[in-house]
Length: 428
Image (cartoon, rainbow, N blue to C red; front, side, top):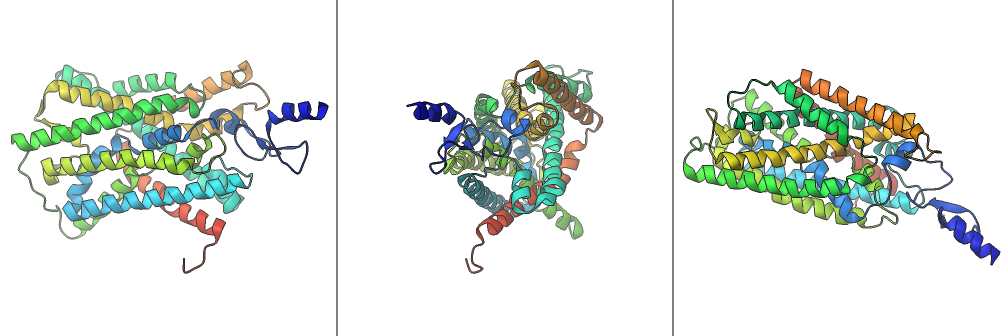
């Protein structure tokens, strides 16, 4: 009886290996080897308590963001056949890549070596140097760059709403970026990735809502005759057309970009087998319904006159082409969803900050851990807001740099990880 009570008491810490009698080998909250001491980033930010539904919410928020509003512009550079083919091919490729990544993660979790971060995967599969000097910095740069770009986008959305209500308003874009940054500053204190599950569910509903509004608005404008004459010819000649094609491909690749699949998988409660695939099905059901509806309806309505954001086409000479209330509602939905996107892409940075400045041996909400968490997360948001306010063209930089960052993370590394882990036959 004494032995059984001791077994139950220690079982609260993890799952006991049947051949070891008393030694817990798997950490209860993360499913990784308990003999490997967890850092504060893994314990506090990447809590493994979620379901596959939560995983689907997180992935949808990371992929289906207001960046998809540039898809009609990409179609304008590729034309109908090229646009549909590239959008479909990128969707199939990323779905396949994310499935491979989830299989690798599940394989290592089954072995008791669950990997919670992209750099952990690179460290264990490719070697310490790859995780520390390439994959880790690249992922952090892409995620933090996305935070800056989305902060700028949030400020632009606020300014758009302001000008709809006050056409002669004098406030500048930088003012709205600071306002948006102030809101993010408060929400950035949400302690863990798992804590965002309800926010990201609302985010999923919001992206469906504004994509439905944009599709309906584009169809309305296209049938009303208010849109410019429809011209579906590919603009540019010679080298300009070639650059336009590569620009469109990079826009589509970046739109599908994620870069935080391992961190999302880390939020799943063990056992993790099969859960990521279910979450991917939830995510890509939303991706298909939103990406294709916005891209096709926007390009159909505006042709090669599609702007960098299709919402810009809803205004002509400062006057809305749809009812003002409809345009206002669409922008509010977009604004609210971009907040969730910012919070999601902050998680890798938050994990690093907790790793450096928190004490994993003390409670997450002890004064020792709360003070540095609030201080450094606030500093992170302030820096991102300042960059967004000082560099109003940062979105263009991310469109270029994002392609070079997200393509390795989402298109190349998953294949490499899979091949090194499972070593499939060359003819497979």
